[in-house]
Each structure stands twice: as structure tokens, then as C-alpha cells.
Length: 165
Image (cartoon, rainbow, N blue to C red):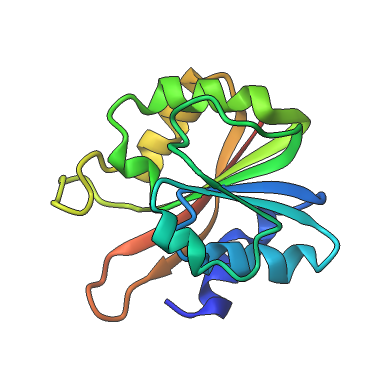
């Protein structure tokens, strides 16, 4: 997926100036956030892989830690989790815990594959229907799919979902 496609998946939900990219890896979606938010924004990139974080070039701050654990973050305008929550078994608990970092009008953006069957690289899939269920169960409001993209190679749909506090 190229940068314009990543930007298109999240653009409709991004606003504010302080964001965290959880499960950021080498920073592909961090770069998409930076493009949307601009150079003055603060972006925290969080990942367990120190080598991946070393490749980050656009984050304001990198944190080498597991996003399912308590994080040293300020109040955030938004949290982006792109292709990472499907590795977490108890998704509702993690999403509920992450709400504490969001400001009163903060937003959660999730980018996931809309597939039903687990795969090696997708052990706990989050379909669009499941996105609605888990965000509501975790106390978020008005979950909605803000964008979709079909892979030209596999036909699998990837979506951007947004929910508010």
C-alpha cells in the first residue's frame, strides 16, 4: 500500500495536533499522520520492536513498549492503531484502557482487514461488524467506517474505522 492510500484510509478521522500511532512499526502510517497533521503536530510512535522504531523518521517521540500496557502519554486528540489490534486477544479491554489517554473529544482510528477467518498474520480478525461491537463495548461512541480499500492483488478489503470518546 502506498502513502496516498494510507492517507485516504485515515484522513476523514484525523484532527487535532497530538496523536499516538500504536503498533507503529517502521512508521508507514506515522508518515500518513504527519502528512495530514503537518510538521507542528506531536506524534508518539509506540511499538515493541526497537529496530522498527529506529527506522522511524517522522515521529516526534518513539516509545519502545507494548501498547497493551500502561503508557507514558499526555492527553491525546487521537489514537491510530493500524494493522496491530488483530494480534490482541482481549481487544475490548485494551480499547477500554486506551480511552484514558484520549481527550473528551478524542478519536480512535483503527485500520484493519475486513476478514472473518483467522490467519497466521491475523490471529484475531476485526471485521467492520466486530469493530462496531468492540468499540461500543469499550465505551466509545458513534463508531463508523470512514474509508475502504480493496487490495488489487488479493481482493481483501481493508478499512479505516473511527470512534469517538
